[in-house]
Image (cartoon, rainbow, N blue to C red; front, top):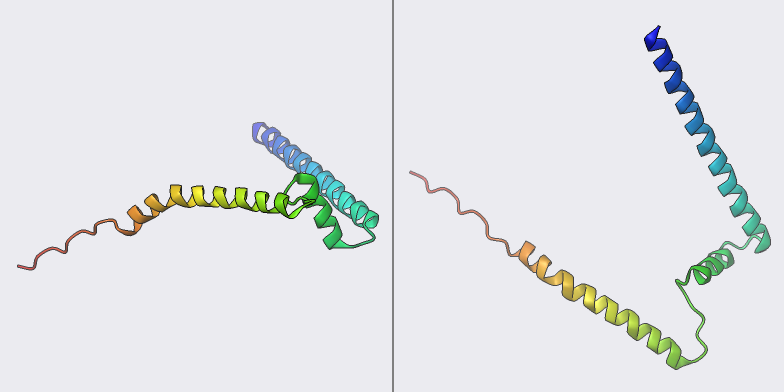
Amino acid sequence: MKTESNNRGGKFFWALMVGLGGAAGAWAVGTILFSLAQMNWQVSELLRNYLVAVGAIGEFETLVDFYTHIKGVEYIICLAFLAAFPAFFKYVNKPTEAPLARR
């Protein structure tokens, strides 16, 4: 009797998780389809609007604004390289064990 109760609780939990996942999936598909309909079914325009909204790409008014942005990204890449290079160098040049001498 006790195992039947535990099994029923597990099945209920599984059904609840599948139901919630299905509802979230249906909502996501509906949202994507609605957004594509608003963009006249152009996937590239939808992606561009998304990237502008999250700040991944920006629309610059002058060449100086664009160059300033690129220079800032370049500085971030340089700092990442300068932080990662010593660890990489140490990993590549780690000493190996000497082979045992034959007797």
